[in-house]
Structure formats: structure tokens, C-alpha cells
Length: 336
Image 1 (cartoon, rainbow, N blue to C red):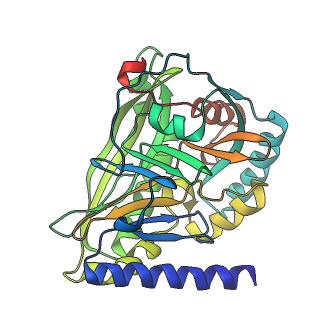
Image 2 (spheres, rainbow, N blue to C red):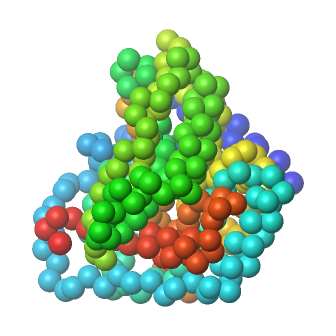
């Protein structure tokens, strides 16, 4: 019954996206990891008391300079190593059997902060930001897909992270064989995904480095750029296109269907909206993000959900360290 309800909701939001796309009506979409609670809302109907968003230059709020006097407290309570190790070992068993080649393992991390979700939204700096009904906030650096005015669909899978202060950090990240293998797998997966909806799919740029500044310092991440050509009537089927590509390969793994089954078995908690997607169709173009760098309100306080890709060559201690490294607040330049 649980999955029948999910399928019904997926059909509803897909149809709504198709209808709005056909009409050229600008809308926001917010879709959780398992598509159990999707939202599709015309931009004109969004209340800023419930939803604030920024998708590159498109936003529904006024930018303001940070004038907060108090120091921002933002730190993590490390997730239990025993809990992580148990999940890691379960994942490794599946990887060694060949059930999956790459799996994104995530955990909820308790957060210590003196900021509300809405304050975190305004304090953070990211290409993609979302505050949703005081349930969660996202400050994501990762594009899901973009569709430009020429009907070119673009994907920018992001895999590989390192502390930027490590000597020769960029070169070490690029030369890391485990990270390289992981990145190859994701690029291949995303290329196959785009081939389901587009023609002339190609890798435009492979493994380039981006820097992110946080309260804890600087980190480097590697991304790639993949593109393809959509049909002339793509807007009429925009919901079909998006659902075919979900969930994002970078936060699930390969092969996608079986890997998601393993994720649900191993993680031991509900991702909810974390690692889902959100985006805006403006009537002609579309831009969307993967919901990573994610803080959620729970009855026990705020938690930061984070994770990383696991392969047969992964080491538990290294992957645990990478997970905790991703618990950060990307700060505005006037906060640094």
C-alpha cells in the first residue's frame, strides 16, 4: 500500500508538471527522495511565509547584507562510529557481491547551532537555497539538471571532496584512484540517464574542481558536465522527463534501482526530502538542484544529513571522515 500511494502521488505531480509546462506557467517543484511527498506550485501562488528559494538568479526574497551581531555557532555532534560502521559493512557486503558498484551512504548528524532554519537560509551562500515551511533548509552546490533556451539539458554530477588546506589538495584529489573510479561511475550513470530523454548526449567537461567556503574553512569538490538535446515539445512532457531521471545518480548509485533498495536497508533512517530535488521552470527554461547540504527540524532538535559514495575500495574510517567534513555552513563573504 505504501508504494501504491507513492506511485499515485508520482503520477499526480508528473501530470501537474506536464500541464503547467504545456501552458508555459512558471512553477516551483520540490520532490523528496522517494517521491512520497512531492510539491508543484505555480510561482505566483508561493507564500514567502512558507517557502523561500534561490536558484541562481531566481529568488522570491530580497537579498540583504548580514547585520547579525552575535557570533554564528554551527557545529556537529559526530554520528556514532559504531552505527556508521554497521551500515558501511552491510553496504560493503552488497558491493562485494556485485549488487551495486557505487552507493551513496548517508547518516543524520545532530547539530549545535544558535540559528533557526530561516536564519541559516539567510546566513548561507550557495547557488541553490531552499527554506521550506520551517521543516528544513537546503544550501546546495549541486545542479540536478538545467534546460536552456535551446532545449539543451545539462547535468553536473558532483563526486569527490578534500580539505582545501591540505598541501597540493587539488592534485591529490584528482590523482585519487578511488575518487576517480567513483567519478567515472557517476558520469557513466548520468550519461545513460540523459540518453533516456535526450539525443546527442556527450561529456562536455570531465572532472573539474570547485571550491566552497564554510565556517570550518575551505573544501574542494570535483564535478563534470554532461549535456544532450531535448525534443521541441519537451515542455509538454517536463514531468515525464524529470521523473525518468530521478533519483539523482550522485546521491543513489549504480545500478540505480538495486542500489536504492540497499540504501533503504542499510541506512536505518528516512532521508525524507534530503537528496530529493527542487527547481524552477520559468516558462521556457528549467534549473534544479539536488537537495544536499541539508538541515532538518526534528522533535529532538536540528540534524544535518550528510553522506558520501562507497565503492569496494572504500575504507570505513576515510568515508566516516568525509561524511563529517560535509557538515558545514557555506558562509557569505562578509561573514568570513
